[in-house]
Length: 341
Image (cartoon, rainbow, N blue to C red; front, top):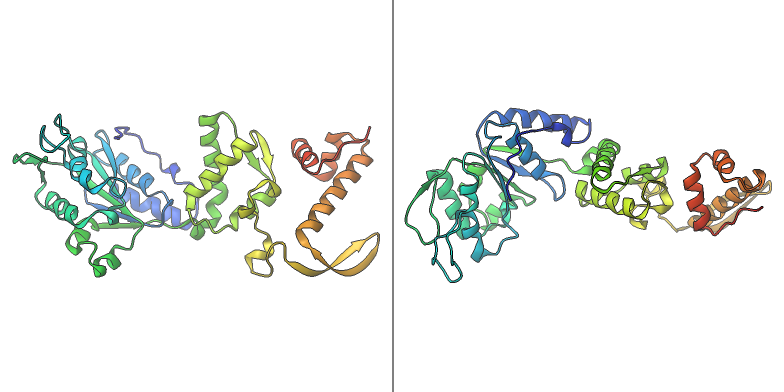
């Protein structure tokens, strides 16, 4: 519910792209101030990570960082969650409860998905920002607050203002220092570093890791990543469960993430029937083929030939094919290839 860890490490923002370097710089700049921050960007881009870093680099770092997901708490509970309540304030309030603002005293409160906050609560939040006081439900006693507010949303709040679903005065109170998170599509060059850092993290948590061969890595760099870094993290975690301590090939990726080079330029779609040239025993002929089936057929053919030439010694065949022994074993299982004695 809250984090009082004082340490901050900007390496949590993986990558060396210009966008990431710029993000790190503005985090350093705003951290030494006490202004409210509004972080915008698509879901899964790491908005809460940035919020935690700002807190951990600030003078408030020895106090609590309290995250609240404004979209996940029902309206009838949100006011109590934020401001607390007194015993008997409503049915079920059998004891008094401290709200998140009180828990964040002298620290930072992170209001995630602020764009989902109902208008009636926006009014009360505005009063807290303006007057720096809160009142628990069922009490008429004002409690002074000293809390930095960092808000985040994937919504376009300026559009929400036009639609009447977000208060303009609250927007300007929160948007003192805006930070826009780049999508993963905007920093494709960071994907290898992000993958490396995520795999290290999962190694510590799960005890296993994976490696990705170049074809698989190239494929992931071409994906759309609608869910951004969170989607990439989920994929890697799934691959570690499926292929612990193994090299993952292009073919072992879920179909959704198997993106051919030609698809990048929309030259063709996977499994499309395409007119191509085939070399077969020295003869060249034009045929209509299913590209995916042809590639699988050629892969099986080369594996069998390599095993035949090395008398079924898998390590020698793997070396000849330019792949790891474990990868070759997985492919042999996949294609049901039995080495000859």
